Image: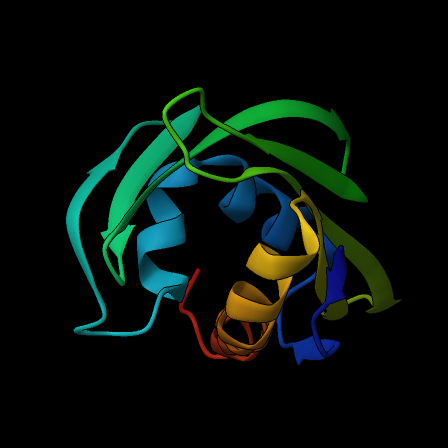
Length: 132
């Protein structure tokens, strides 16, 4: 199952957005307020609970200033990759979006596709409003 967020315009250059997102402590600022608990963040990983699920994200690979690949942790109930793509619009603006590739069965897909799409769209939109 692939989920692609909406693209968002960000009032920071591509390098600043990339550096901000490379620190997974900052993922907390992109999550819906009041919708997650038990936040733990480090530079290379973060974990939290949302809708009863414990999720862990670990940094995998990156392409400086263009792409950050995150993978689910061993304790996450869903096996997935989350890629963040950042492109330059101008010297002071960039654009970003997320693509999640989850390896789930068709029953689980029906249950999680809509909430995950909503979450990733929220994260993408929130990125346009963070203060880096």
